Length: 111
Length: 116
Image 1 (cartoon, rainbow over the protein chains, first blue to last red):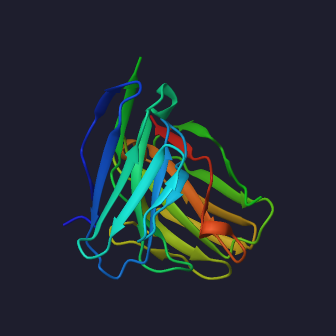
Image 2 (cartoon, each protein chain N blue to C red; image 1 turned 90 degrees about the vertical axis):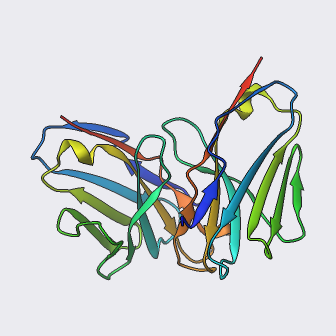
């Protein structure tokens, strides 16, 4: 089983749509959780950290369920500029340990 | 702040030659550098972890004699792909961490290597 699994995608949605990304992780000892965004041929960029209490940043809402080892990202009122690959990322513990990336889910927002 | 400069951004080389990729932390001390590789439509896969002044720790299946990593200073780490072959063609990206870095990780812009 892969450490981090995501919806295979791709998702093609019209502008203004709400889209949800799902992710599960296998290591119950994981401590830090993130969503990154990666544009084609670019480095991944941090979109937001994910906390157990859930957190929101504008149109983006992230949720974490430690019991089911599940992470989600919701994008509301999607924009053309949201088109990218969204990566679910987990870290086993804080400090100098590497991030573990999911395969990513490609989103295309269509006019 | 917390910028990592990665060079070159892309390189084309002939099979059998070596290619060096550099990652420099411009405004912080990168005590640890992670090197990743990403094939098309795949996730970033960790190749190795290097701590400044120490030998790199390689992930299973990554040949340490082929992918030479040097992290001799707190601001520079290099990855050298030796005797490159077409199957080494990939997107290589570094990620640095160190004290005082918010969220702990900063990525280089990546290097797209094509071996012909």
